[in-house]
Image 1 (cartoon, helix red, strand yellow):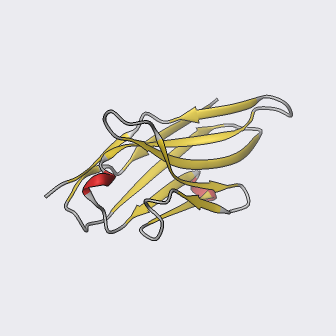
Image 2: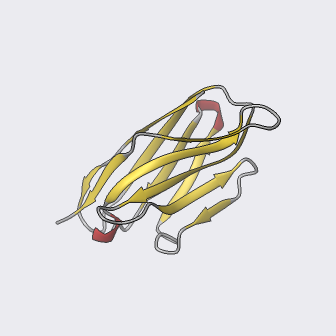
Length: 120
């Protein structure tokens, strides 16, 4: 079982920056990828950024060039550096981890979410 705990959310003015963290605990046989997703009120959850076990990253079109995903494997922590924030970035941000518990059983875990509000 893997537990994911996000932190770092808050309220920031447009143009500002925030860094989200996601600490993973528990054991996994093999991690495939970790990522950040967000969900605004009345909207579907959408991809923000992912990073796979090889270090390759993928970003949603709306955050490319502004957000950076990274991980510290020694600390089992995933980060999301968010720069030049816009009001439309306002959402609950969720941490996600996908992998396998053994050779054949996949898992897909989510954190509880952290609120990011961009407002003047």
